[in-house]
Image 1: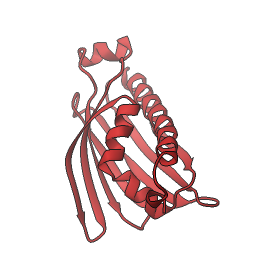
Image 2: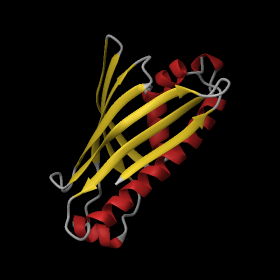
Image 3: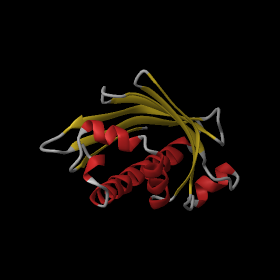
Length: 170
């Protein structure tokens, strides 16, 4: 199942948003705000190329039919992002902690200048769950959760920037 979420973040340029997007203090606060438990595994920068690997565990209830399929286990995942600073584009993929051979997701992130001093963050991707008769239910649950989380993340980002010094934005 494909998804595509786009949000405008006001008062920050592309370079500022790239710095913010990979800032650990910001990401810790963001994950706490949107109900995600987060553990940084790896963050490397070499020649403007960033690789970030993070283990994420959503802290929310799973619908009963999905929980039954998963045997009551939470859906945690490891997310890997490869991004080149200044390009406005990166690739991401996740590895689920459950049903690892049946759940795949990957996509791209785009950060581009919008009107004025604003940026637009777009995240596109595909979630595939290969479980006969039930894959679509789980895909819809995951995609709805991803879309909701990115909406909350955009709102949090805007509040965070409003409370931050101007030097972070430009």
